[in-house]
Length: 339
Ligand SMILES: C[S@@+](CC[C@H](N)C(=O)[O-])C[C@H]1O[C@@H](n2cnc3c(N)ncnc32)[C@H](O)[C@@H]1O
Image (cartoon, rainbow, N blue to C red):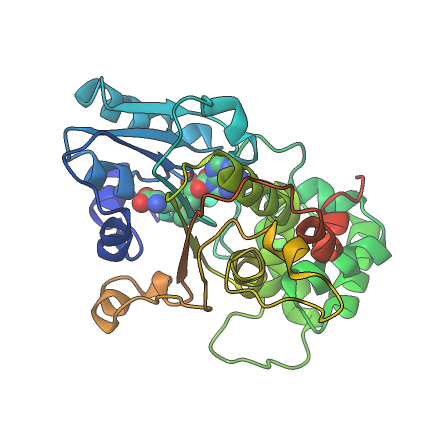
């Protein structure tokens, strides 16, 4: 398929754009917004319509630099871009310029998914790369070098794939004959391994591809560190907005906003409420989230799994949330398996 950048730009629909802008509530005052996942720049472009808004955008993917430079030329005094991971937010945001809003629109952009040379799509016939940018390894290295036990764990835990054991076994078997070079070879292995199709609506490869992509890009580690840094850096009264696309991401965001919010009840009646209060750096949060409207789903079916959550920072001083990292170690430990 020959997809040109301009045809993609035309069909690029930022997920829940109206809802994101409404929560950002841009005004004529000077405000600083951080777009942690610039991608096609959908949110940044809309917010730049307000002349007193300053946007600091980042993205780990160097292929977005061109698009960001175009915006920089047009909005010289309002827009800055960094090719950086959001786990490094603290390297970018200066302590004396605290942001009003920090936005995370997680996962892949349409541009990444539809560029088949990057190997994110199971429709690709190219090499199995799956690097979003600034990562140390490719999915090709992962499936051709890791042992069966680690592969099974990655596919089972990060992909929530029930048939991970058989898929891992068949990957090992296939590579005994020949290196697994292309996405189509991997797709064939997964299709042969899957006995049951538990959910006919999703492709049999979806979960394994999700697992490999999360592993290659250390996505849960990124999300956890990004959220912690955002709550440390944002101004009191500022908002953190997260749009997630699968259950692991959403579980992490929901836990973080709920567990460190003022509404969190004392976890134990034996624990003094004062020690619980210390970590109430978000206002009351009651598991509220937004999903795309039916009109948006028709226009952009890829938004169907999106969930938007946002939390408001209180004036409580930041205390490092050690137990948050501990809670999700199951995922981050796997992401750190050496290859
Ligand atoms: C869903 S797209 C964002 C789309 C964007 N909101 C728009 O309107 O076009 C996600 C983008 O975030 C980037 N990304 C994902 N994880 C990241 C991370 N840890 N740090 C920086 N950028 C990241 C991806 O490279 C991708 O371009």
